Length: 177
Image (tube, rainbow, N blue to C red; front, side, top):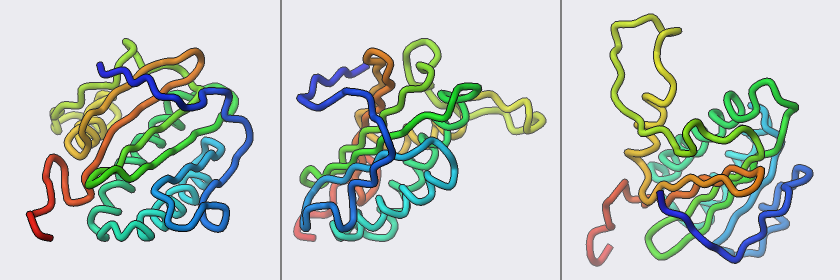
């Protein structure tokens, strides 16, 4: 597990605050949105994140890849970290760094089992849908599309961080492009 010590705030997330769009500094390389952990709010937050990536000229296939990963992780937070708890908040941060995007997802739900993000592995398809194990297909996809994935629990907060290359996982754009 890679632990990052970053000079960033870790106080409680508080109320929903869509810090993007008109409130975002033009030409900024950073995006942040805090929203209630429910599916409708997630869709709206993802739409704002995709608009931000568009301002960075991330190609459509790269935006789609980022959206799928963010949606899968945030849905896991909604379904598992906050399951049976009062609805909480989710915070998504995206920062452009050279040819990568650094993404951080924060929540105050339950910690991940075993204190680590699931490995993600191919699962048997010849079982009932209800019998598919957790941490399988979604985490396999997340791990395939991201780099430097790390999870840590800091106080009452889950922090998942990873990088993505809009040109594809583990690939640099061709020289001169």
